[in-house]
Amino acid sequence: MTQSVALNILKLGHTTFLTGAAGSGKSYVLREYISYLRSHGVRYAVTASTGIASTHISGVTIHSWSGIGIKDKLHAYDLDAMEEKQNIYKRWNETQVLIIDEVSMLHANFVDMLDRAAKHLRRNESPFGGIQVVFTGDFFQLPPVVRFTPRGGRQVEEIYEDGIPPSVFAFSSRAWKEAKPVVCYLTEQWRQVDDKLSDLLNAIRSGEIDEEHYELLREANESHKGDHIKLYTHNENVDQINQIEYKKIKGDSRSYTMTTKGKANVVESLKNSCLAEENLELKIGAKVICLKNSPDKKYVNGSMGTVVGFDNDNAPIVELVSGKKITVNADTWRIEEDGKVRAEISQIPLKLAWAITVHKSQGMTLDRAEIDLSRSFASGQGYVALSRLKGLKGLYLKGFNPNALMVAEEVREADKTFQSKSDQAETAIEKYSKVDLEEMQNKFLTNHGGSLKELDEEEAEELQEKIPSHTKTEEMIKEGLTIKEIGESRKLSTDTIIGHIEKLIESGDKIPFDKILPDKKDVTKIKKAFKELETDKLTPVYEFFKGKYSYQDIRLVRASLKSR
Image (cartoon, rainbow, N blue to C red; front, side, top):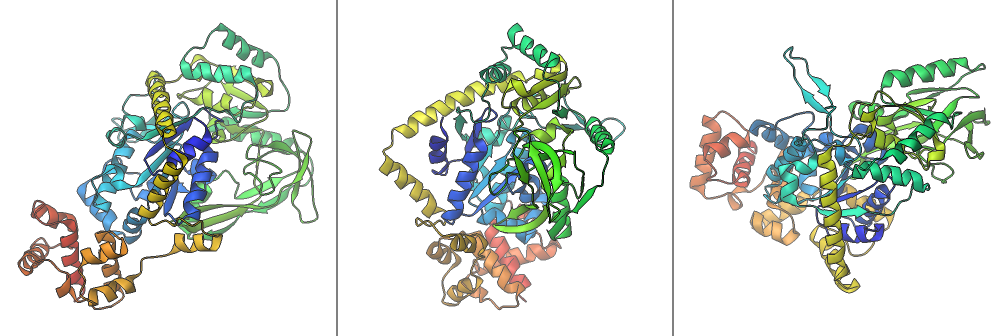
């Protein structure tokens, strides 16, 4: 499937799995879709399975965004606690499109918890509470980390060397199967320019590695020695190599200190997930790698070079592998949530690059690399490392073991299904005329609060940041309208309207509850239950009545109690 077809499918609003081999342009399609949503005023959230991945897309981890955090189970009281947090409740109910990048590293159990939280908080039993979820990634890349607690009681991480258990992959979750995401399998190749490398990577994906492929790897082991970035599977190798090589260089160091904006805990999270150094030291002769695409497109994330000098403003001058010299100025990384910047850091986007881990290389494009896969321990590590390169001419394979090219058979089988479903989706969309397709895409925009007119940047920013009009809700209640009538009139959910009411009560406003509460007898019973159960939580009262009263009615009665 081409990028343009995938983008057209995304614009229809279906829950979608955007996938394809490394270098097929998934990130490009994702950026284009985010730009489309933003310019048409549709509320979206950009998340990823890991902190490192989230910095590539200016997002947050899905664990943080969802409010689930590091939990491995969701109990009723957990859902109730999430509901009590207004920021969590608000983002779940106002977000129309939820993007989750690097889904290969997301555990199936977490996908099911995400679905359960969405249904509960949105009061909608549709898959993921009716939100369009866009999963992106490639299951041939790094898998979820499997955690278990041994007899000693200390939690450790384990990667199964003989393949990943079937239950851990996101596509094996109950929620994924229920949602039946439309698959967009990108088939164009935008990274590899070497047919031999593309053939090798495809052989890893299909499980058809033969002697010819091993011979290619042996040749890479015997030649190409020289000035390469080194990729290792373990952190201790990387840290040791970088420090040893840096200390060998004579001359003065230049220091660059990271600057930050935002709440301390969010900034700390961004620091931990970003590859940028809090205190970066550079010398002339230091090997470096660029950590971002430059605004002027002079370098990209993964460009490598050597520091050859410093300009009058102390900015490092780097000679890239291509021979081009560039000046690298400070750049920013940020976490955006609900259309707002929650944290921002600024630093020179360079890192010492004699060595990095395979894990941290995911998402990069490298010109040359020395790769050591002798200690490979996880499915996908070999594929991730090799697929960073544009061609085999840039590879020196220092070490290798059979596990390096290991891919779970379950992933291969699922991939065949994904390709078939993608073909079906492409055939289906080709049946629609351009006019019909635009009409369906426009319907998605209007049904989700978007504008058919493309907004300018200022208008788009306004719409992403705006909050519900509590004042308008209050005026309509005083006019005698019911909550249902207000919701229908303003195209807002009942829960959103009740959220307005709770906000008004917090501000000290008096609400005429006699116009919006349920039947008096029911109100009396619900109030009595809150008192007898000695709680102000919703779930215990809901369970006490065994579903007789809706969460909305119980929540509304609770609001009336708080207004006294």
